[in-house]
Amino acid sequence: MNSKITVETIRAMKARGEKIAALTAYDYPMAKLLDECGVPMLLVGDSLGMVVLGYPDTTHVTMAEMEHHIRAAARAKPNALLGGDLPYHSYETAETAVADAKRLVAAGAEYVKAEGGKEILPQVKAIIAAGIPFCGHLGMLPQHVLEEGGYHIKGKKEEEHQRLIADAKALADAGAFAIVLELVTLPVAKEISQMISVPIIGIGSGPDCDGQILVTQDLIGAFPWFTPRFVKPVVSCAGEIKKAVATWQSAIGVAGK
Ligand code: KIV
Image 1 (cartoon, rainbow, N blue to C red):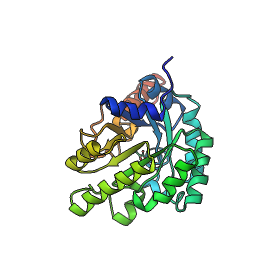
Image 2: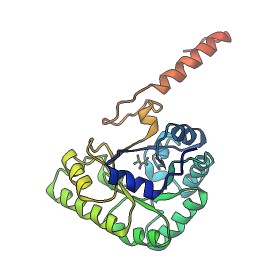
Image 3: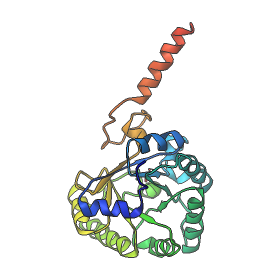
C-alpha cells in the first residue's frame, strides 16, 4: 500500500521539482479510481454544481451538498490528499469560515479551498489557526462569475498582474499549503510559480505551474455539453455510454434513437 499523501508530501513535490497532478472527484467510485491511478491530490470542487448537480454555475452550491459529496468521496479512503471547496457565501467572516471549514473536515476533507486573496485573509488565517490545511484559489474566481459577467483570463492588465503577485504572496505568507491559479496568462502564471515557495496548481494557466488540476468530467468527456477551451478530452465517456446503451437496447429488442 502506498503511504498517505499529506500536505507536506505536496509541498515536497514542488521542492523536488516534481509536477503535481490534481483532479476533481465528487463521489466514491471516482475518488477510488483516481486514487488507483496514483493522483496525489483530489478535490471535491464546487464545480460539482455544474457537472453533477445541473446548476448553471457554482454560486448555487450549498454547504449541505458539499458535505454530502465529500462524505461520498472520503468513503474511498484515498491515499491521495482529499480536499473540499468552501461554497459561495460560506466564508464571509472569519467565524463562519472556521465553522464551515470544520463541517467540511468532519465530512472527510483533509484540506479546504476558498476563492480570493487579500480580501479573505482574515478568514484564511482563522482557518489555518484552527489547524485546517488551506489551499488558495486566485485568478478567475468562478464564484464571482455573475459579477464579472463571464469567465475571463486574468493577468493581462498590469494592475491584475501586480494584484495576483501580492495575493499569492499574502496567501503563502498566511500559511496556505498550495494555491490554485485559474485562467491566468502564461507568463504571469510562470512568474508566480517561480516566485512563490508553495505549489502553484494551474488550471487553464499554461504548462509552467508546479502542477495542474482539471475537472475530471472535462478530461474524460463525461460532460459533453460544455468543455472549457483549454481542455482536450482524452476520451469520450459520454460517447461510450451512448454506445453501450445502444448495444444493450438492441440486444433486448428496443429501438434506440
Ligand atoms: O471547483 C473546482 O472544481 C475547482 C477546480 C477545478 C480548481 O475549483
